[in-house]
Image 1 (spheres, rainbow, N blue to C red):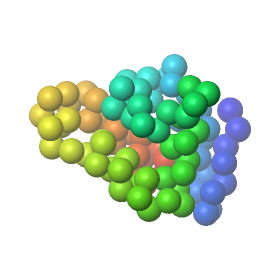
Image 2 (image 1 turned 90 degrees about the vertical axis):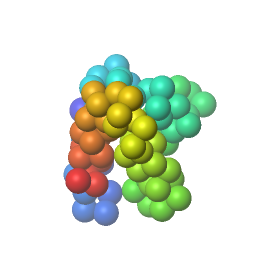
Image 3 (image 1 turned 45 degrees about the vertical axis):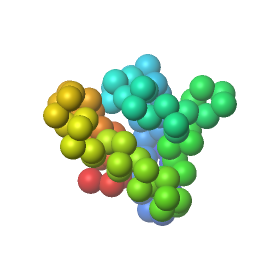
Image 4 (image 1 turned 45 degrees about the horizontal axis):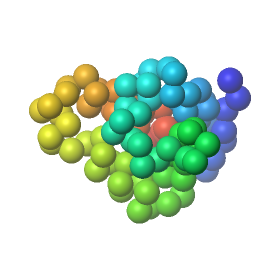
Length: 86
């Protein structure tokens, strides 16, 4: 799949494919980032929008998620890494 070079970050756009891990395990948690077309391309806004980026970190890094579902928390860490934040 093509990659996006945003702010010198090389991001594989397959990370936005909701049928593949890690995103397929996070679609419920990240519903607010789903666009009207059903895609998660709105997640790319976190690269330049600090409010959306903060909201993403709140969704994926909250203590309740870690305690309730460690697997989803791990998938969240994987997503943040693939987006270039870790």
